Length: 106
Image (cartoon, rainbow, N blue to C red; front, side):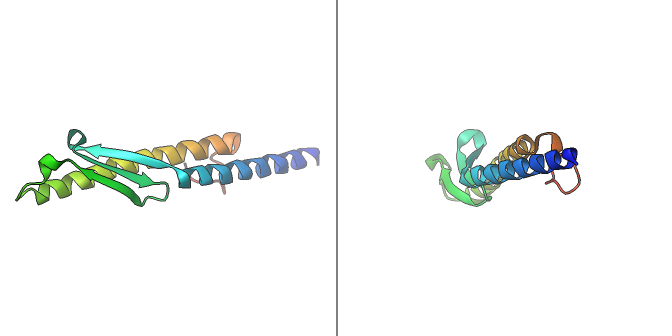
């Protein structure tokens, strides 16, 4: 019965760590870029765009399609980094219980 109590305490500690990690993720901002830095954006922890910067050199008549493609690429870059950060924090918070049934996917 002591082993069950110990396991329960570990699970509660891990749950606390996961909640703390979730709060950190929500406060986090990740930057992405494309076009050699001509387009940059920041994503909040929930995936919303926080900021978007487009270099003035891109703002010319007929460049709209290029700008749109670069914004999409910058978003993809930032989203990939955000997903990696989320997975790392969950993995760190879950510790030895990572991968068990009922645990968040990594």
